[in-house]
Amino acid sequence: MKTIAGYQRANGDIGIRNHLLIIPTVICSNQVCNRIMQMVPGAVSIPHQHGCSQIGADKKRTFDVLAGTGKNPNVGAVLIISLGCEVVDPVELAEEIRKTGKRVEHFDIQSAGGSVKAITHGTELARSMLAELEREEKAQVPLSKLKIGVKCGGSDATSGLSSNPALGGAADAVIAAGGSVVIGETTEIIGAEHVLAERCVDGGTKDKLYEIVDRFEELIGQMGADMRGGNPSPGNIAGGLSTIEEKSLGCISKCGTAPIRGVIEYAEDIPDGGLYFMDSPGNDIECVSGMAAGGAHIVCFTTGRGTPTGAAVVPVIKITGNPRTYKLMEDNMDVDVSGMLSGEQSLAAAGEAIWQEIVEVAGGKWTKAEVLGHQEFSINRIGPSL
Image 1 (cartoon, rainbow, N blue to C red):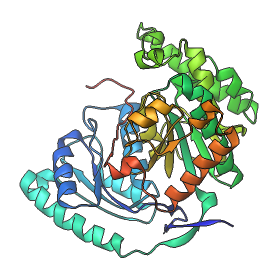
Image 2 (image 1 turned 135 degrees about the vertical axis):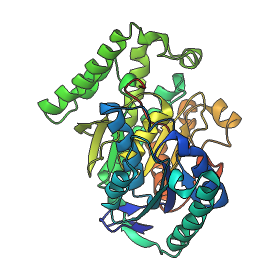
Image 3 (image 1 turned 120 degrees about the horizontal axis):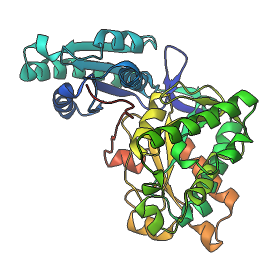
């Protein structure tokens, strides 16, 4: 059994990073959380615009994403900071995250006596929690427990010809090693959903895949909008993509050839082993945040036009098959598979290069996004504010 150096969690999960995560339950506590993160190098905060004036499914989604991010196996401990009057219950949130066995602390700004006192108290608490994490030693953990998200953004004509098929080869390697792969972006499979449906393991899974596509198209119709106004995006079109179908056929190649074992909701736990589809938006950061909340260890992100975004608690491996993009944005790109277009690199070799990068990043190598401090985070919202 192949192993990597990682962190063995109390609940049996494995982590490839050991973050101290600071969670604001509401937009009102963002600044306090950010100031504490600045005072405690090594801590990570996830500011967002939600947590207040939400009801029903929308409120639940915010809770689920915050809880899932806290439960992500790359997180070693969690500090929750609330204002004191929001709809997201910090006690309930802490209890949910504690189910993983990790240390979770929480307090509210109103009871602390205001922002200055909250920052002082939170900084002391965060420093003590981080000191505990830094004393934890790595262990050899099984590579077969890896959960990898596959995503594309800033796509161009090279995405479907090189980087996405190459990532598909790496996805097959992850699954062959016993790991899980999750593909998302419901908006990015429209026009090619029938291709993925034929790969579903049973009728129920196929029906669920069609259901989430129909649900999205119905929502767009209720808004009186035409999704073709934003997909393909202006950048996609400038990069040589002409239709939704063309973009989608290139998009789905990044998940390889394995059968689809299940369709899961946004931020839902990613099952062990095999390929899964997560109902999620095409928006880069919202999609990656949903995968992280579902338990992904790493997200592999292909881009033709080039994008610098990373994520708060998971390494994001940037892959391009466009030689011009790699040259212009080498600061942000981790893997260059543009040799496929010139005939200097085979599809198999390109997939192997990405797979080896996954293994190295899982073993501790930092991605370019991590080096540059990219910690983007965003929650996909599904309801109006009250």
